[in-house]
Image (cartoon, rainbow, N blue to C red; front, side, top):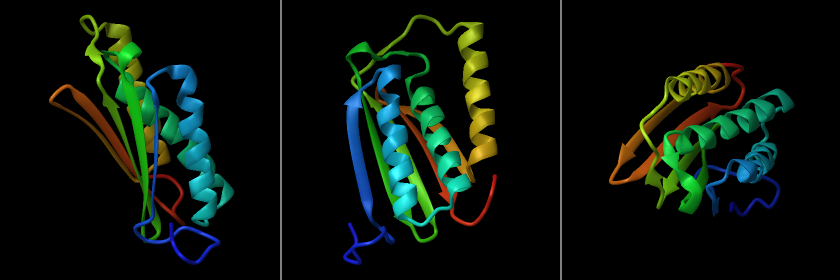
Length: 141
């Protein structure tokens, strides 16, 4: 944390790890809103980041059997922006993707488009990583 005591500054990083379960994503939303508030984001930006964090975590779990996996959320201050990275670790691949699952993933990406400045998803060595960046002072992407 920064040494100013009242807020977060450039390079400050918060990390949260929890079982990869949809009902626990609320933890990530709460942490994201608290970080955004401490970083000086206004209420609209805070709500955007809270909702985007939900979609980010759910998108990380999309297409996997996350029952034995863990989600690791890292929030980092980058000047006037917050970066979030959600990594799904130790989860097995789910059965073949369904058309409904693919449609839900597309919808999540559209929601992220509307809420944040940048976002993405990548898979590597059995881990899925989703990320976003939300700039303070700019509403929408």
